[in-house]
Image (cartoon, rainbow, N blue to C red; front, side, top):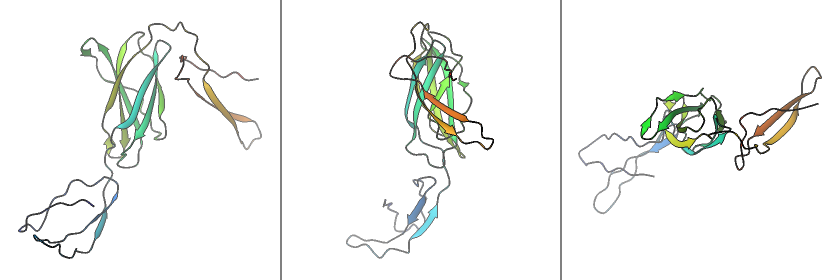
Length: 195
């Protein structure tokens, strides 16, 4: 419980510290120098969704010479139901920063990884990420990362899993999920071979 003191002659108070998208409880009581009076009945109410706080973690790994692999962790304070993420980027040359460009929005709130492609080799980028709710974009979190000058290193093997998906027509369908090896050398493109 948090308390707010109100002057004895006041009969109302504006409180703006409620957490968005949550159930809140409030009660009032009078007090003097020695005693607290009995509290009023407790009222409860729901607050509307708000914009999210910042993501907890954001990192970028160079993929080849023209892409970055982005990894983040959802906000600790979503302040509502997350609807996805907005990613922006801009070039950094010495002390000047280029125009802000938006990557295609991510509409899956469970997604915490993305590839940012079509970048210039050997260029430093400022990368921004904002979580979203129906109330709008949340607080900005930004980092800076440089793309590789050239893709001369042989990439490490990605981690992957696969499982069969049942179908109504009887044909075999397999879903392959791969994640680049962020602890090694990342490739810029991926393909699956099967026979």
